[in-house]
Length: 207
Image (cartoon, rainbow, N blue to C red; front, top):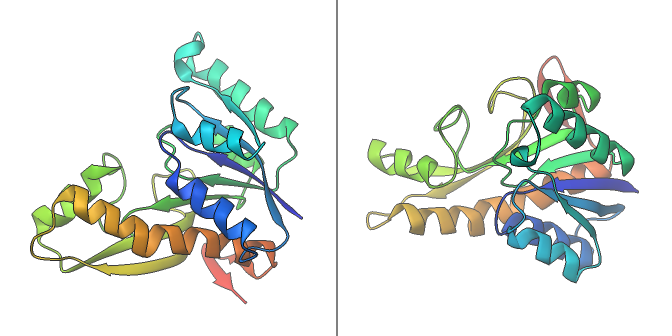
């Protein structure tokens, strides 16, 4: 059984996609052990509560410095003995200590086709604003493993979404979630739970 910690800062629609996939049997041999947010008002915490899943807020604002926050985040996560950390819209930089402790065991969903519109400053609506400003015809979402960089880890899955002429950032954001994010994030977890994913020479390989 693959035990998951899901980190999220907002509404938790990707968390819901994971929970639905588990409930419907599309993900076998995995369960969400804990949901952690840096935002105590995040609706994702309510989603977890409704399912009887452990949930807590760990916010940098509650600690004297970032080192103290990093230690608490790592210690609390470790206390649940999770196998995989899923970043589902988590707007806090993951500390190097956690990346080292969970090497190739942290995945992130990013709302673009990496390497486009990713890295520092590209998050949330800013990604879709960038795509529309550039005039791309295709965008999408990427699931990747997390390393020490920003959106630089091995790519596991990608799914393309067509950009429409009348798209606004909000409209495009919603469609990327519905057509890509909510599909490939549960699929990535399914593949990992099935033991079909390996990271070799900086690349994620599905067997």
